[in-house]
Amino acid sequence: MMQAIDVQTVVFHEGEHYVAQCLDVDVSSFGDSEDDALANLREALELYFEDAPADSVAKVEGPEVRRLTLERA
Image 1 (cartoon, rainbow, N blue to C red):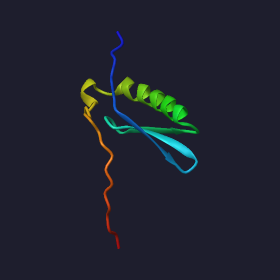
Image 2: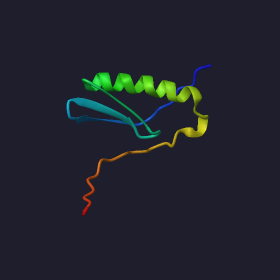
Image 3: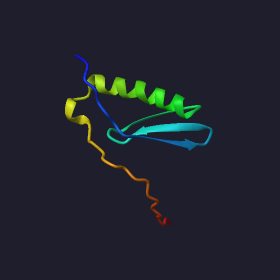
């Protein structure tokens, strides 16, 4: 029986591609458009969850984008 898993994702433009990243597990993908990136992420997540234990999802609630400035040498 299939189990529905809801995950939080973020999509951003990087260079010539769009990157789709899952916030609940460490999986990301990319594509030429946002839709392509999300479709590729869906496929990557489906493959990830084939072998992942059920408790491998760390539920991210209400993510917010924040800028963090770092200094480096």
